[in-house]
Image (cartoon, rainbow, N blue to C red; front, side):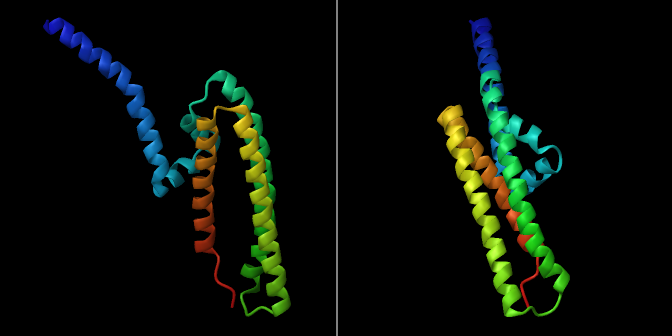
Length: 158
């Protein structure tokens, strides 16, 4: 009887162990400082660990991920170019400069939104819906941390 109980407890522990690790990884994604720390290393490795893809899913996922990251990089370059002008100016700007800045920042946001929409559509076709949405959520959290850090570092227009 005691042996059976011990075997049952061991079986439950073995089954629960991967679930506990998955919950730990997921809880780390909700903590902004833990997310930042994880992203300072290898973002791709962090995404891989969080997604938990099997081989067939990974084969479909990573090309979509790579395309999306290229699109994000392009949007980030647009945003960076616009913001470099604000940082370099360091004095009150003209109305024309401010209008152009607003236009450029909105264009970068629009490019990012188009990239997210395309990625989401492709992910939903390639992966089970729960995993596709998990990546959309994960990337949204990553982008929010990035946007917060950017907003904190850039001064308001004078």
